Amino acid sequence: MNRLARVLFIQLCFIGIFLLSLVSTTNAASLSILPLASSINADESISLKVSVNTGGEVINAAEGVLRFPADVLSVVSLSKNNSIFSLWIEEPSFSNTQGLIRFNGGLPNPGFVGVSGEIFTIVFKAKKTGSASVTFSEAFIFKNDGLGTNIFRNANTGTITIGSNIISEFNTPRLPKIVSTTHPKEGEWYNVNVAELSWVVPSSVTALSFSVTDDKASVPTKVYDSSIENKRIELKEGISYFNLRFKNEYGWSNTAHFKLQVDTTAPNPFEILFKTSDVTVNPQSVISFVSSDALSGVGYYEIVIDDKNSIVVQSSELPASGLYTLPSQDPGKHTVLVKSFDRAGNVTSANSSFSIGSLNVPVIDSYNSQVKEEGSLSVSGTSYKTATVELVVESPRAIELIQTVTTDKEGQFNFTLKNNLERGDYTFKLRVIGEGGAKSVFSEPVLFTVYKPITIAYVLSYLAQPKVLIAFAVFMAVMLVGMCVLFYRNQKNKRKLKMCLQNLSTTSDKTISVLTRDINAMVRLLEKTQVKRVLTNAEKELLQRLKEDQTQTKKRT
Image (tube, one colour):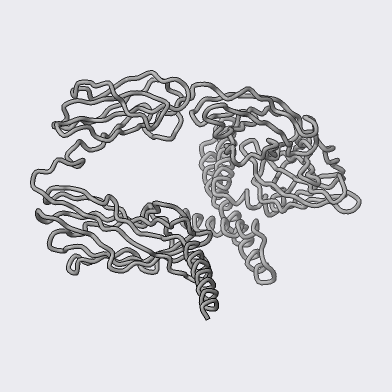
């Protein structure tokens, strides 16, 4: 019986050891309030950090409730800016009445593992002297095992001692603020190697210390008088840090570090290469260019064709091969200039030239060199099959119109342009646009004239103008006066002269009467015609003028 008991005891010991080994494989995770102990004066503020130690395990969530004495402390703010958690079931919140803070957050896979993962920070303000403890009343830390296993084991307590004359880090000067007129933005590159730096020195500061180093964590040690509020320094190429701290009766401030980036060297030389040939009928040439810069790197390129508008290409937009397709160009010789700018503004340039070949100019088979007003300009000819032919009409003043047609399977084309041009001389020219945008040069300008044809209606319209009628009547009167004068001189007969003058008056009346009769007849004729058909624009204009002449003639009579 004793032997059986010993066997059972040994077996139970092994089982206990095995269970203890299982428990030991799960490390203890904890929550902390840092710093554990701190001291401030009444009406001052202090920042505490709530962090997690996962104990070597991977976690994906934590939640808890913190308590604090509401009569001694009040929460000013909660911040999760630097939190390891990105997902919040319940964002950090507080109640100064109840003296509690709540949180419940997590993060997606792969979770977090570490000894000091910040969850959020608390800024407390001390209401009165005394001692205050910030404790966890509830806490959970969940393992990232798909089961939500709670591996929380313990949490510490943060203690704040509040006095009336405590010297703390909050009594030392605030972090200096450095500004620069030559290098205003930290993190940007400048091609200026002399920096102008300045800062404001508080009245409580008794000394200061500054240095220029390559290390952004450097703490200056050489002490200077507090009256120094600016510094001019020469910089080497690359990245440097200007380090500055203040001192007052309680000690030194933290060190401010101002980053300075200098690059005064232009990007490395490069050349422009053409993918195929620098002579092609393809209007879009493909070039390649790659520049480099050892310090700040290439920021962007500027491409200028024929000294015209520039094209800006960011270095991130250019492939590693450096290939770039230029915009479509007309046939002829062209120049291309590429400027490489680094991020500090230094520039290196390369240039080259290329030619766009021309397709054959369209052949003009026929056209009408004399075009009536309100008529049509007809141009026909031959070019490439199923290509686009462009016709441009120009006057001495400007381009009047542009029209395109597509050639047929035989390469034939025909333009018929309804004429809306005023009378005068014009020219037209042609070019062909083929597949892929390839073009020919324009043909030599061809002259044509727009005119107004002379018709009976046009002549009648001209003669029916009041100034023409008056001129004709005056002419007839002068002729009669001249005849009468000659007759008088020859015959010396006053009576005949008197009769002549009477005849002159009669003749003038008859002439005006005849003209009036003709005008009335023409008006009646045009009005009858208007009943039978629509009058042309010229006939309408003539009818209007004749009616105006009728009115003026009646006034004279």
